[in-house]
Length: 213
Length: 213
DNA sequence: TGTACATCAGTGAACGCGCGTTCACTGATGTAC
DNA sequence: TGTACATCAGTGAACGCGCGTTCACTGATGTAC
Image 1 (spheres, rainbow over the protein chains, first blue to last red):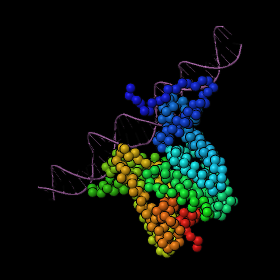
Image 2: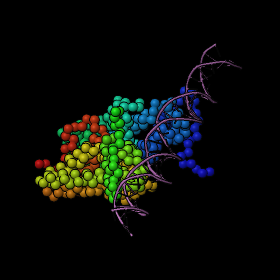
Image 3: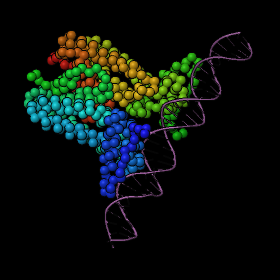
Image 4: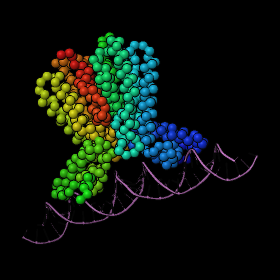
């Protein structure tokens, strides 16, 4: 008896040639820990190993060091976000304005559904020491570029359709994203804040420069 | 020779009755470490003690535990921010719009001058475990309330003077603050981001709903 | 003016902990002949 | 069909580290008489 909440999973060793499976399990376990605790310092090689049900040194067969695991987590989170955003833009087949709003909402939904991952992606919580370890500057640059491009395209469409007044789409895209980020980040950090009910609409409408309907 | 960069300061013991001085030195050292490294996990009791030039256990004469030191750092940072903001509003004695803009700029300046402290104040980086340790929920609530009040008053003045169009000042204050926070936070986290030169103006103008001049 | 004493400010050694990482290893599984 | 062998997936024990915190202590300084 005596249930052990941090019980390790029962694991069967992968067959020959399927060793790469463990890599995926490691990243998935790290994501779980991040989402559950909201604290990137809870994602240690040892805690990940416990969660997967392996010995800690086994991780070194698949990652050079601890930051490399976090990088893999962040990479997969960005991929997931971008995929979700693309889905949101496509589904809403209608007007440019509706598509931009759907995109923004989808962004905020991701942050609300995965606060721990969001903070790690954008929070500057995880800023690896590039002077040591396996993670290079090239690994960091480019993360989030796709996300910004999706926003930029949607805003551009609005301007072309005449439903948004922007004199400088790239700059206003950044401004819009900053508003979304501020909201997403602060909601992830202080969920008990007394949020005005229409705060999302206010932020989006103001920063997208929607023209009067 | 052989300079030790982490050399402890030479310290003379405080005289009787002046023991409280050390409390201030501890907080100051923690602030220094936070500003220098930008990493709250670098602010340990031992690193603070080294910086002050005392033995680690000496901190327990002044703080019950480690989170209490961080709380003192955050408190003093909020006090400093509020004081700076009040100065910014008062100096600019002119129009409401100019005062609001000065207030926003001052907020951003604080974040840029003290990225480490800013992230600790608003970044959700430091979220103490309230279920253990000396920090209570009451200690956390109210941090930042004054800051928001200053913004709210300045926006209200603009609306009264007819230079800002807001249908709901409390809600639009939150929206404005979110934009500022997004910008401040992201600049603290990713200073190398290709920021549009007028990004500050864009964010403020859009979210303050300034009417055309 | 002297002296015993209480108090104050701070110390040094030690504890147990979880961490990242290394090392030499084990034992199952597939392959060559 | 059998067998030797290489490879693969993963292990167990150990390392040194910095951490928060505890404990009994020291020695200077002010105070009461």
